[in-house]
Length: 234
Image (cartoon, helix red, strand yellow):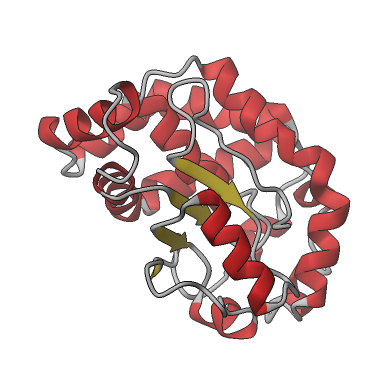
């Protein structure tokens, strides 16, 4: 099974949006079974090219498309991460990531709205994935504490996530091994701080992304997909 796999939007409409960590050491046959079981049409891979090359998707059905979108860029700058000491610090880094990667978040929103069942993931399924999923959930009108709760569910899986990422030989290990311990957790205050910062400075994900080009038609498409009873493959 994919580590950290869940449906963060199941309270709205189940079976359309999934999140997880990277595939790890799953055999191609296992990956194919998981994709078929979830009915996946699309995978949005938020990792860098180096990360994706190290742990690729193999054995997917031909009907599943992988869209690679390096949220935050192809180069990992460890300096801002080394300054993180608390959950609040981590949340402020998430908010900065959202601002810097707003164009990528808009692409994600449009893909989730337009396609069939979609999986969003990065390496751990925590930071980049957490920001991307939070954006989608906020645009769908989810309560902030529900978004925080979904993010916090990753914390219980962190031991297994670290094992999976390490097994993949993360290309940034030489940087990540020296990072603060809080980055190995998913504290609720991190996502709560992120949402608070974005609400104060940008009017939330909604204000930020509409300022950067997200349209009313994009929002309508996203909300229709998650609030109507249209067939899942529509």
